[in-house]
Length: 199
Image (cartoon, rainbow, N blue to C red; front, side, top):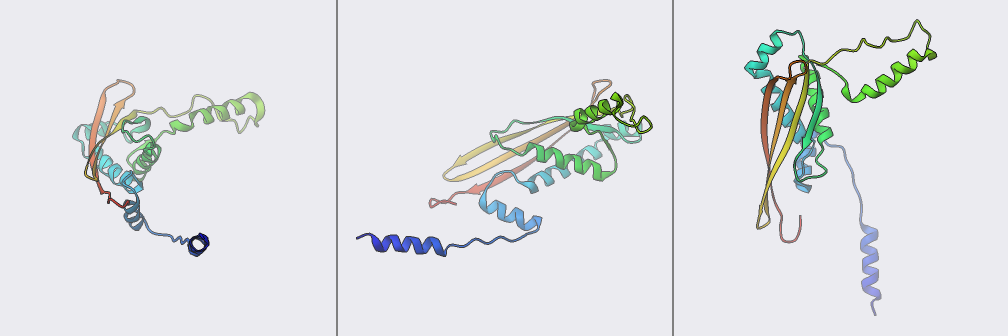
């Protein structure tokens, strides 16, 4: 008879429970590292702060900024060149834009919304809106600098131990001249150990 093992299994499943709680970012990072060695929100926050600090301390960029009140910038493309298909590159972009905005040193151009803005301008100028409220085409601000970048990751694994070394690179290029104004890089590593019985 296999009745008793079946009953025991049913009782075990029925007694399982689920609990959720809110935690701060520091605690969230700690618990995330207990679950996975994948890139997380804290990683994005840390590397972005280092990158922006490096940009602001760059001597060549300081000279460039002295010629303009506040550079107008937008992100062209930051590529995920890691082997992790689901690396949160958009989250990294958003964190970068937020850090630039909070510094008060830059004017952000919303490149990602350009098509939606163009559609609205076209709608307004097609006679669908009171002419006194129509926004004129050709009044948008032009960016001074475009940001490009990439993320690399080198991984080494041996006997259940893994080290992931990330390299995050950014460069700002003057749109009018095509001259690279500043280039910065920062690195971060994540170490993990997998036990024989699982995580």
